[in-house]
Image 1 (cartoon, rainbow, N blue to C red):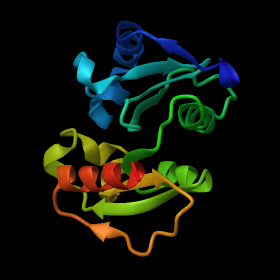
Image 2: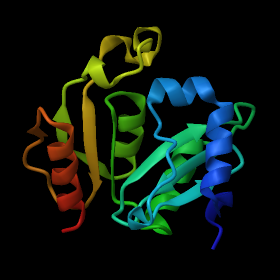
Image 3: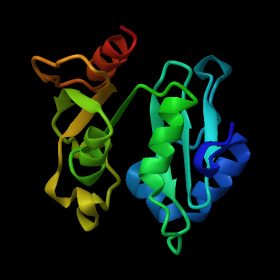
Image 4: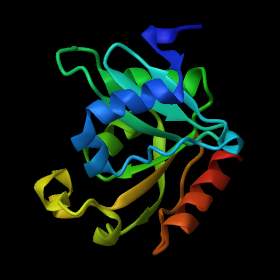
Length: 166
């Protein structure tokens, strides 16, 4: 199945594209270490975007590389990752991306404050200048009674992962 032109690619192809977008990868702190087999990471590419989804349902690494394309890269990739590859949770900064995911049925379940210690040293020159919250979203039809605040990234991540697996 090749929904909306999104196909599987190798880690090497993903890394090559991200390397060409070096400013994006530096500012977003994209991890370009080769994943371990235990993550079960699948890399995806469309006409204008790359991303990945892990076997646990975690979605990440979205990067648009073809800015001439009119493709709604985020939405197309989101639909592909949810429908075909069982993507069910992610983390992102509060703002445009989180609002796009909410429109697609994801709900915020946890948040933590921005921590400049984990941001690129020149983050103030980017969209991160206002130090947005880090949000954890889960694809669910269930009502989320409360957004839990964490002061630890790993705890927030584990909480979102647990909710996504229910």
